[in-house]
Image (cartoon, rainbow, N blue to C red; front, side):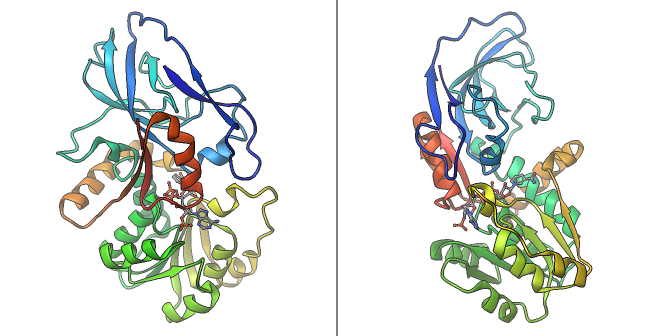
Length: 329
Ligand code: NDP
């Protein structure tokens, strides 16, 4: 079995050598345990800030889709697939209980009705529910309003924009490449998209949102968010989902968002998706239904091979992914 461990603290962008792959023999399973083999691993932005708190030598965290290949636990029979928080490991011996209380529970995957099981790490999993609850609950979007979504071509952002279209909003996305812009406009139906790497967001946004911005779903923080807040209408709603622009900063820059928050009397709310753990299944079922109705599209950026997990992670932080970044073991 192989697993990645935190070897050194990240400093800026993660580097080769910050993580290490260990090879080890696993113990034979005891009564109540099962052995699972990873099929897909997830690489997500939160792993970057999390690593600062993890103890060195511990297994790199993350969700995976795994197949049960041996079992002495009737609740986890051989052949079933599970979603779990086993981290970046190829094989795991488990008793079915999560190792930490905050982790999402280990569960047998439901039938995705022919859709790939990897979607349990994306549109039909944690990122999907982040979009569903984080946008609908916190932004309280109304038909005819204008929403801006930053990180728009990623797993969460591409999903939020499509929910906003379903709800009748004008959707303006902000993303980092022309290919991403094309996908968002031509395939996902975003009304307007800004390439923040080649366009001046502060100049373009007011032209694309002449009636102002009512909702902002923020995946990136930093300068982009300051600009969006300054273009908001009175009593706008902001769902603060993440701040990836700062995750690799050694000294995160000072922000200047406060005057806009005060002047426009904005309601800004941050969230951790676990808040809706009691409604988790509702999110998955609605997202699945939207996919089946052709209203919600998804994309995955797949890296092959367990040993390439670190590369997939850094590529995602640098924006190489469109849609959800995953590793096929
Ligand atoms: P994505 O699929 O969006 O991947 C990350 C993307 O971020 C990259 O593709 C890149 O796209 C963009 N990015 C990287 N650096 C910058 C930068 N400096 N400025 C602007 N964009 C940048 O990841 P997810 O959809 O999984 O996550 C999106 C956000 O949601 C993250 O901030 C994450 O931490 C947060 N999150 C929060 C949760 C919660 O419970 N609150 C749960 C899940 C996710 P580009 O080419 O456009 O730059």
